[in-house]
Image (cartoon, rainbow, N blue to C red; front, side, top):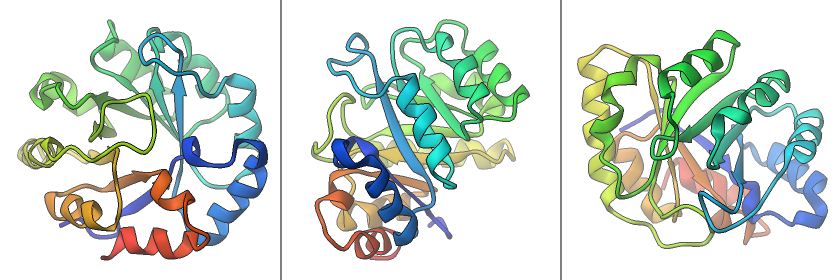
Length: 218
């Protein structure tokens, strides 16, 4: 079980007309990161945040930003995110062509580099570049929309990945996104997750701090 697990609420489930107030609520509630899902309408059938909004959010909060690129051309976003001093950036193994090059580019510029994996993607596919990763984002739902049901297939993938990280004596965080609530969080912590992304579970409650704390220890 991972100790000191980090909670990264996803703004995908926040009130889009009141982002500043939502960010203030997260800061006061003790969130560790703020998760931003960037969708282009091609890799996934939805559109979300563009560069101007990412820049505005970065200027507003002291919390680290965790940007998940669900886009068809992730390499085109990297320099902007580097210039904005985004803290965590992940892109999808399924779509990226020059994975090693992009990971090294992010890390050389002070950004934590991650790969995201869809539920049907084997975790072993990223083993050749595991040493170039700071974190891996395991999707426990099919990406594109919030509020989906947790897919248990993620648990075995986390365990396999955790063992591979230990065997190689690496420091790579395991992040999980999709269908996370107090019940699934307990399973994910036990499997070895380090960062939990939660959207609707956090933002559908008036007691955001209570929801965040329930994810840390159920």
